[in-house]
Image 1 (cartoon, rainbow, N blue to C red):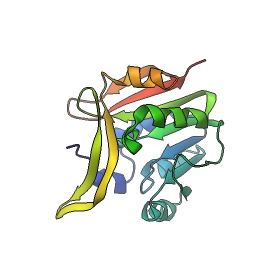
Image 2: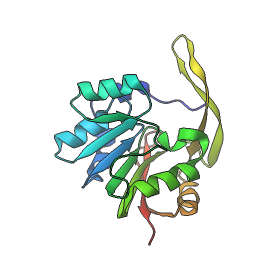
Image 3: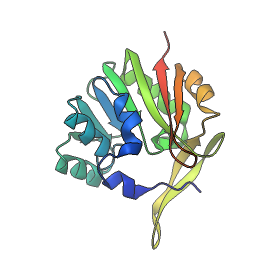
Length: 186
C-alpha cells in the first residue's frame, strides 16, 4: 500500500514544494493538480501555470485559490501542447493510469523541445504497478483504479523508455520526498 498525505494537498505550497516550484522558470502545466497548491504558488511567483485534473471538486478548489484549472483527462487535448516549458507530476502522479512510460510519453508531447518534467518519486525502490484505491479515516473511498509507483532507482529506465533523460534526482532528508527532473531528449 502506498500512503499519500492528502492533507498536504489542501494546504498552501510549503518548503517541501520549493524544489518543484524553483524548477519552473516558464509556462508550467500541473497534471493531476488536485486543489491547486502548486498552480497557485506558481501564479503568485509570476509564472504562467495551468492545472489539469479529472475531479470537478479539485478544479473548483483550484479556482477558489485564484488559479486556473481545467477538468480534463490528461490524455485528452490540453491547450498549449508542444509549448509547455515544464510539466509537474507531484504527489505521486507519475502513477496515474498505472503505466508510467505511457504517461511520460503523453507528457513529452505537451512539452517544448527543451522542456522538462518535474516528478515526485515513490519512497520504495523499483517500479510497482497494480490496483489502488483511496483510503480515508473511515475506510475505502471509491473504487479501485490502476496506479503505479516509480522509485529513485527505476526512474532513469522509465524516463529513457519514454524518450526523456534523467537530469537530476533530489532527495530531501531521509523519509521525505524525492523528486527528479526529466528532460526531453534530442
